[in-house]
Amino acid sequence: MGLYDFLITAFHQFVRIFPESLQWVAALLILIGLIGLLATLVRQHILFILVVILLLPFLIPVAGEVIADIFAFIRYLVDFIRHIFFGVIIAT
Image (cartoon, rainbow, N blue to C red; front, top):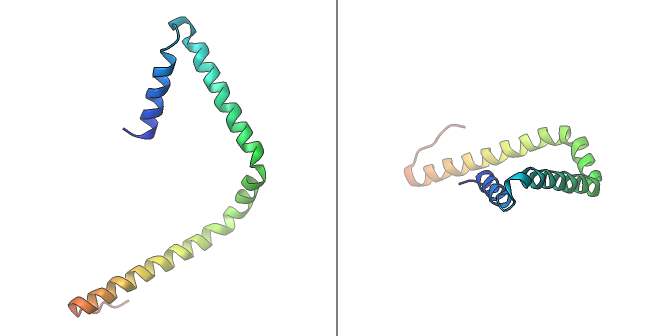
């Protein structure tokens, strides 16, 4: 059971506490509360969100190069270990 299933199950169990005629009110209050929490979170971290949005186009190529370098290093280590244990040299 994943996190999504857990949250949905917990929501349904909480809403079932109320009488059937008031369950929609409880669900609506939960929705309004979640929207309010999200709005507060965005208001508190708006500067960070803007910086991430502005820098994201520049970070994608850099992240790609870093990931490519990490994979190249891992491949070098694997080739080195193959050479040490098996005497096999793989052209890079």
